[in-house]
Image 1 (cartoon, helix red, strand yellow):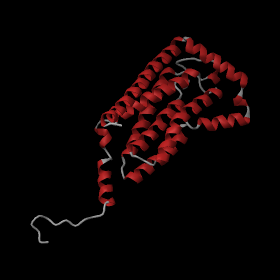
Image 2 (spheres, rainbow, N blue to C red):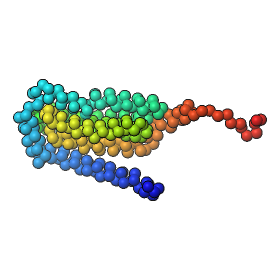
Image 3 (cartoon, rainbow, N blue to C red):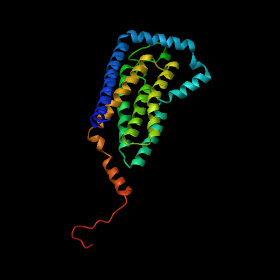
Image 4 (cartoon, rainbow, N blue to C red):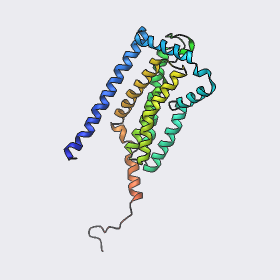
Length: 249
């Protein structure tokens, strides 16, 4: 591949990512408006929740346990344990503390935005029996779906940014694709969320991941990197004795 062709590849990937982000913003706005105005998405919510009630996997011990475990790929507690261990590993291997800053900002951003929407709309969950807004519900959007997209996306971002082992990059990439799907399907089959809840959660996760990356494309992205690289360079290279100009040999 020529140098010119190589230079064009990152730009092409960036363009595709912006299309995904733009589509997610539009989808999130559409779904939110539909939930408020009870449009076609709302009718799909009711139809799917009614079908899940007839299947009743939540009332069967083994399917319920399996689906609950699968849903933990988007559960905040379980995912943060894995992301925390991964962050510590990257920090230790590369002697930087920037990954910890990324995770802290991601957690703050996700918590503020998701709970602002949850508390602002106050939507009840399918288990309540009907979708009611501005009540005591916290159903919209699905935090599990948003977690699955954002946190596994952060995992891929970290291992790629710091050029970790290929097997680790591949593992995180597979999880970044599989976890949102597994989490979303599990939450629907357990009737923990409406369809629009999980769709909004997925779209919101994509948007927040892009916002996070933009924040760290500024000077914020330099914090915790330079000092660590200097330490790694100083400790990792063999020292050499170099005579100063004019000094006796």
